[in-house]
Length: 198
Image 1 (tube, rainbow, N blue to C red):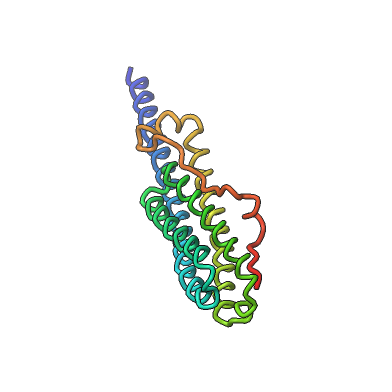
Image 2 (cartoon, helix red, strand yellow; image 1 turned 90 degrees about the vertical axis):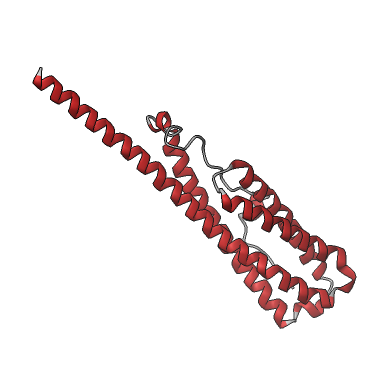
């Protein structure tokens, strides 16, 4: 009887240690993808901060293109609002999806702006515009790298959370659902380096 009791107690201790390990791994992986999203947030904020400067320089030369400029500003403001919502809970599917859609709209508005700016040769040689577009291109690359790191972290979290036996305990430990990947509708275009032509 004494040996059986020791074996049962040892099994209970091992089970508790295993459950603690599952809990700690879930927390670690969740913190990792939340930190990865914070890196995206930093780069997107930098991008959003560059856009008004770009618009200001372009506005002087493109007085007749007010609608295009306003579309970029509106898309930037909407994306910034969705970024704030997603940053509050980077694992929430709807927040990530709304951010993804807003980023797609902003990307389209910036593309239209680049096409319109082609008609203004004085912008091609403007030193401020060249510097801003270079910073914007660099930031776009940083966003792509940060998004890849975030998606890798989310995949690691989701894979662990979906595996057996963590899937049995994840909801009990406060991890009821998978985290959402950050994908953009124009993922084919995003795979290419951004092209800013002047």
